[in-house]
Image 1: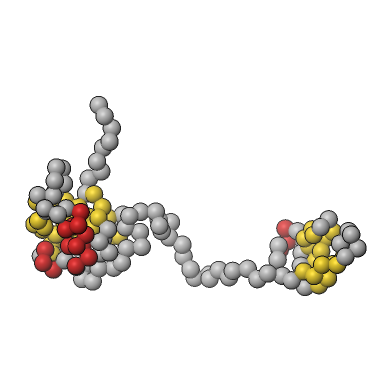
Image 2: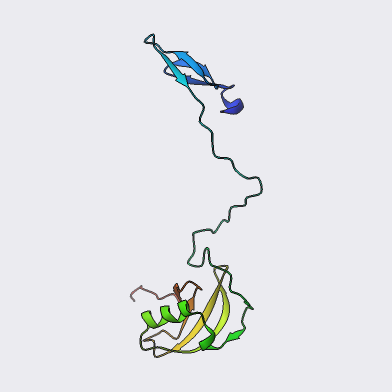
Length: 141
C-alpha cells in the first residue's frame, strides 16, 4: 500500500486503480487483474548497525574469555590465527599476543619477529583475517 501519499490509489496504464485485488479496464478495452505483492516486514526490534560491513573487523565473532589488553601465550592462539600468520609471514615467529579491540571488534594483537621490513605487530581476527598494525603510507616525498 502506498498509504496517504496517494490516497490508496495508484495509476495503472493511465487509469487510477484502488490497491486491492481485482480486474481493471485498460485503455485498449482489455482487463488486467492486479494482485498486491506483499512487502518485506521489518521487525520493530531489529537494530541496524551503522558500521556493519564497513570495517575489517565488522561481523567479527566474540572471543571467549576476551579481556582487553590481557596477554595470551602464543601457543594458546586459535589455529586459524596462527595458520594465517604462517601463510602470510612464513619466516615470522610469534613472540607475544594480547586481546585487543580494533574497529569495535575483538581481535588479537600479535607481536612478530622476522616477519619482514616494518612488520612487528599485526591485528588478527578470530577467523584469520590479518589487519596491518600501522597503515603503510604510499605517498612519495
